[in-house]
Image 1 (cartoon, rainbow, N blue to C red):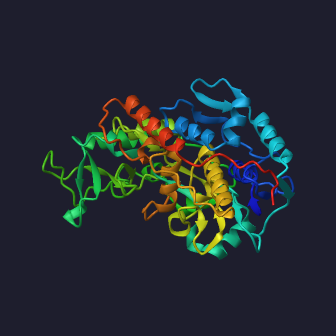
Image 2 (cartoon, one colour):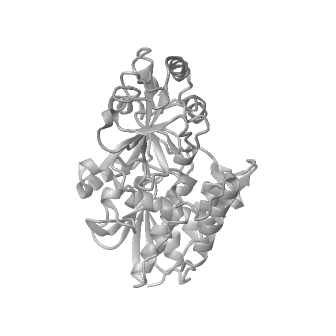
Length: 440
């Protein structure tokens, strides 16, 4: 049995490792050091380019739960991270150089993995393959993926609005309604009076933005307008744009508000809502500060902050099945940020899943089904079967998990109960590797 993996980032290394640990011989393709993406600088595998933090480590957090699930699946990433961890409070942070060196050494030493250096301009003509080329996939391979999927199914820039949990929205201040009463009341509306709007506008225009890389600047601003840039064009620019109040009546006053921020359901369960028209390049702390000024969102829990950067990703709900396989060509799987998972550990988790499930397929075993009560299962379900029309990348967050049967008001206790439910479900899964490195 043999499989190919394209890309030696976190997802690719995890996919190759999971396959090899289960007796599948792997050819791992990596274009570095012959060619680098605009963000990568070093020749090693699993290079961390944005941060050395792998997020919170406590079980009762989304990231801590995801890491616990990854450890149960035999994660190379988490094991290595713990070996080269540096002090970071409650987060798991690493020495980035040591982390990459350890991952590279482990992968190169595995008898079941053969590394081939050089850019892949297409997928292998035969045999199973996992494409894990990340958010900065090379132009040549992007062209091949476009050929396989259709040009309209591949996005090159991630300009996404923030997402908040429904339970954190103050519905004493916000209200459900459709503009002019047309259709169902699908939107949550957060009304502002003139004073609130002017204070919000001033804070928005003056908020600190994230500097873009040189290779990101031109196309991002051609294709999408950040809400803070639109706001800077004039005091009423966003009030005649995404915050227009026309066709809406505030039930608390019986009058049309001065401005309205609308929230639209992000998932079919209605547990997550995005801020319509709020694609933004503000720093995360600034998003929390400014957007919490919106009536009804004073205590909002942000499942994802808005982002604006170069990020190649698929329209995965339309293209991939529940096993991360390309519907039109099932021998080709995708993993990592190109699928629409957002973040280092999320990317690595998808690679583990792709590797384990492909190994099971090659051995004639039943598919690995990650239950939706697990963070891993919920995240993959969102990516591959979200039901969202305008798909955008998503990271781990408690809002994507199905609610508990029992109501628990205390958030920390509720999150811990969700995590314990998840880990109990993980214990029942067939995750133990069949150790036959390099098997045929």
